[in-house]
Image (cartoon, rainbow, N blue to C red):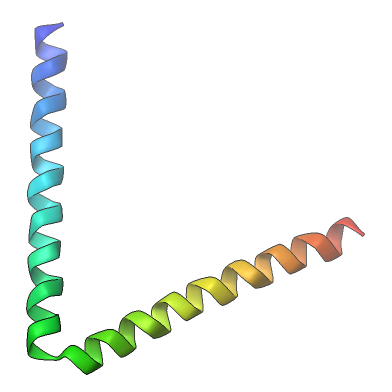
Length: 64
């Protein structure tokens, strides 16, 4: 049981380190290029929303 907990803690710390690294990258991009970063985020979010919308509509049409 102790080994399982140790492994879980190691994985959690690795994930947190990776998340911290990614957050640092995003923050530095926002500081260096705020407009470009926000535009990219906007377009990626819009793309994901439109893809989800088309998936929902396609599923609804198939079920008719």
